[in-house]
Image: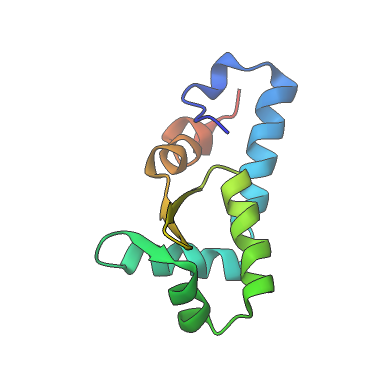
Amino acid sequence: MELIKKVNELGEDEALDFYENMFNALADKIRLKIINEISKSPNKSLCVCDLEEKLELKQSKLSYHLKKLVKANILIPEKHGTWNYYKINEEQIQVVLSEDTCCKIF
């Protein structure tokens, strides 16, 4: 999924779909904890195995939440050997949390 830099260039329905997907992905306590743990890590990237341990979640449940965050382009997956690492897509977060979004959508 590509980064959407200018949501105002989308049609109204596309923009609403974009915001719905983003806010849906962010509207979950576990997913917010995932983002928080990644943001606190020294290199701003965490392995799935580290997230499992820190959040005390089974791999299947964690995978479900990671998939939603990746689909919304909030997290960027990186494969290192046999492990997947995730980092926050800071640019995408800024698109959603910009002053224009908070004050007006269209």
